[in-house]
Length: 114
Ligand code: AMP
Ligand code: ZN
Image 1 (cartoon, protein in one colour):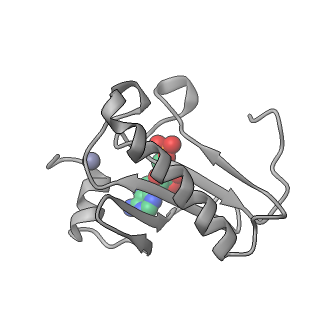
Image 2 (cartoon, rainbow, N blue to C red; image 1 turned 30 degrees about the vertical axis):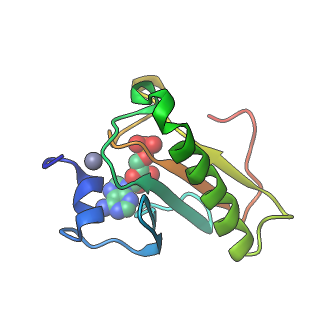
Image 3 (tube, rainbow, N blue to C red; image 1 turned 90 degrees about the vertical axis):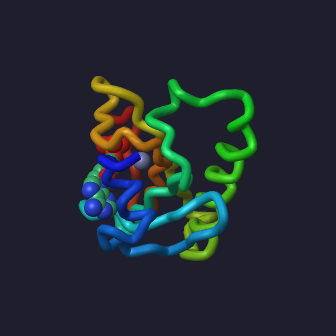
């Protein structure tokens, strides 16, 4: 989608600190990190939010979650712990409407969330 920030990062039109890419996913460091490790895992295909997923996307979402686990392990946080979050729409604080999985690790993460 031409006007989407994350589509532009994926296309290389805006710089991103990319930590992983493959045929279907790109992962890059969040510009405003909320933890020592804060990575966004995004599909190359533009999907606005969790509300827009179809059953055909089940494999894609599974690969996003498995990539989060792999990146957490790669950075040494698999045993300490990490958090994976999809924010959806206004009350959850979604600001970029290209679906993304937040991976946060490296400090104790409070629960319940704010
Ligand atoms: P959300 O609030 O769940 O929609 O998350 C959007 C995230 O994108 C926020 O954590 C922002 O800090 C992050 N973000 C915004 N612009 C950029 C950018 N240019 N590169 C990397 N992350 C970004
Ligand atoms: Zn997009």
